[in-house]
Length: 85
Length: 460
Image (cartoon, rainbow over all chains, first blue to last red; front, side):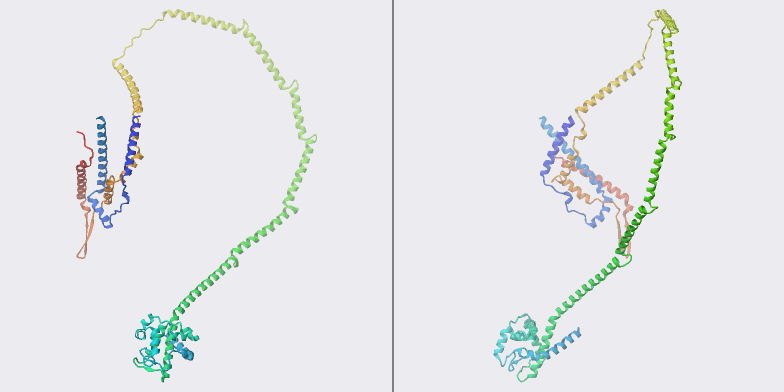
């Protein structure tokens, strides 16, 4: 029962968030005309040998997820505090 | 090409001599006009002719001094070309433009040494020679003007002839095709015709088969018909044998009647057996009566059984007073009791836990589906495309462009004509240290930068 209520509230909040995000201007990331030139791509193997760019991207993904989670948690906490007052 | 020019020149020369009397009257030059070798007409003695010519040609000097410019200038209604057009030969010559006419005339006059003026009058020979040279030049121009058309016509004729030959070749091929279809023994037509003949022969053969089947003495039809007749005769004989007294059917019928007769006679086996059954029933009745009579042995035995039962009862009655409640002392060890109580408590706890779990499941429910996966993926894709939340996605894509399979760098240097190959794969340890240092520094940098990306203040 409680999970159903929470699911209902979460679904509504997500739908509201999707609606608000839909009002923002959109940028198609995959359509950006950015490509690595051929000489650079040939040297990327050597660069990745010293700088593990794939691992750095994975670390960046986790960091972004944690930052978003922290912001959401603090937002909810502040909302609850304001309701108590 | 020189041959063509030579032949053209000879033909033109011949035509000029033959046609000279025809075109002679069409010339506009009077016998008393003066012709200067630099192309001026009637400059000294015939001013009217000069004015007329200048008016027509738009400047004789310009024509004489610059033939190309004279070609560019269109001279309208030149008297000479108009008069030339009055004769049959002049009709073809009239197709030559006036500028070409003037150029040809200039060419004719330039055959002689320039700057010398002479009068046509009194110089009939020169007049004739000049006229002939003019005609040659005009015809040469005319032939040259027609040469492209002749070339085009020849080329077109050659292409048409090639097309005709191609079509003839196709017709020849088609002829071969017709021969393939109709002519050869193995052709399609012949093959089908042979099949048709075979079919006709088979039809004729079937006709023979019909005659063999129906009309010959030994034909299939006749044979079967004979068999049918024989079968009919056999049936007739069988019917006759069936009806006759000695027939098998009659004998069997008689046997059946005899059996029935033996069944109904008193001495028959079944009658004897029925008598035995009746006797057995009678004996049974006597047995029942013997069983139910007071003197029967059965009654005697039942009485004995009752007496025995009474004896058993009396015996039991004598023993019953001696029976009393036994003194049983039950003692439990505390350990056993504790184990039993523990087990009972375990059962109780299990029941309570099960009830509590059911209660919690009912009240709380399953949190695994609190966030819809479809909504989450929609939110993720929307955030990756909505500005400014798409900035991390763009940064990720930019960094992804730099991602590649790590490979040790190799270099080739040209030193003094020799190739020096440098392979950095021996520096694997150094590369590992650098890569781990990069990871560590990146994490440290993100930790320090995290505070700037927390947009909600922590309550204190």
